[in-house]
Image (cartoon, rainbow, N blue to C red; front, side, top):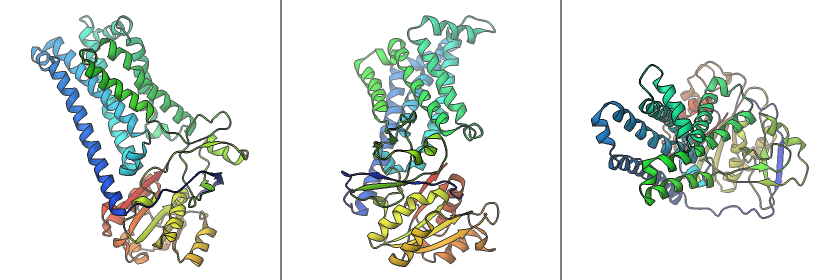
Length: 425
C-alpha cells in the first residue's frame, strides 16, 4: 500500500480561480436532484424504446412464434443493448454533473453493471438475428450471421464494432486487466467505445425503430452525439502518449498560481512525468467525484487513506483546515508514509490530528496495521476517533481496502450520506 514512486509536479495555473463556496445543504440538495433526475431520464428512455418496439409490432411477432418470435426478441435486445451501451459511455465519460452527484465509485459500478447487461444484449441480438435469417440446419446461426454481415447495409461495420466491444469485455476481467499495462488497457477501451459508434450506421439504415419517424432518428442521433461530446481529458501535451488522458489527484490545496499533483508509477505515462520539461502545456478537467470540499456538511471531518490514496486527502486536509474544520487523518501505510513531513507540519502549526497505522495488515479482513492489537476494526476505529459518528468521512485507497473501511465507518454510526469513497487501482 505504500507509494514507492511518487514524484510531485506543480502545474502553473495563472488563470485558475477556486470555485466560490456553496452552502452544504444546497450542494446536498442539488446532488439528490441530479441523481433522481438521472434515474427518471434513464427509466423514461428505456420505456420509450420499449414503446417504440411495441408500436412496431413486437408483441405480435412474439405471439406468432417460430422465426418471428426469435426475430422480435433479437430486435428488442438490440434496441435495449444500444441504449445501455450509450449509457455505459456516458457513465464513464467523467461528466462533472454526474461525478459530483454520484461519485466515481458509484459511476464505475453502474458502468460495469450496464456493460454486462449491454454485452448480454448484444450477444442475444446477434444470435437471434442470425438464427432468424439463416437457413434451416445445424449451421443456421453462422450462415445467417455471414449473410447479414455481407448483404445488409452497414452490417460489416457493425460486426467490427461488435468485435471491439467483445475485446473490451474480455480485457475488463480482473485476471486479465491486472496483467495489462495501463496504456494498453486504456487504448483497448478507447477502441471499444469506437465499436459502440460503429453500430450506428446499420441501425439507421436497416432498423425499423430508427427510420420510421424523424423523432426516433433524432432521439438516437442525439444520444450518440451526447456520448461523443461528453468525453473529458486531462493530459500533458508532450511525447507520444499525450493523447491519453491521465486521472491524477491534487495533493495540495490549489492556489491562484499553481496546482500540485503527486503521481505513482503505474505505466509509461506516469513514469514519464519526472522527465517533463518546464513549460509543457497541460489540459486539465475536474476535479471529479465526491472527494471534493463541496460535499462537506459537518464541521468535523475524518480523512482515512492508504498509500497513494493519501494524495487527495492531503489536499482536502489543508482545504478543510483553512475553513476552520476539526480534521483528523488516519494514515495507513506499509513501509514509508506519504507526505509524512507535511502532515507533521500541519499537525504542529494547524492542529491537524494525525493517526498512523503502519506495517502489514494485522490479519486478513482487517484494514488496520498491527498497532491496532487484538481489537476488531470497529473498536479500533472508535478508540482512535471517539466522535467518528458525527464526522464527515472521506476514504481513499485500494478498492478492497476502502470497502472494508466503509463497512466499519457505517457500523460506527456514520450516515451513508456523509461517507465519501474513491478507489485507486
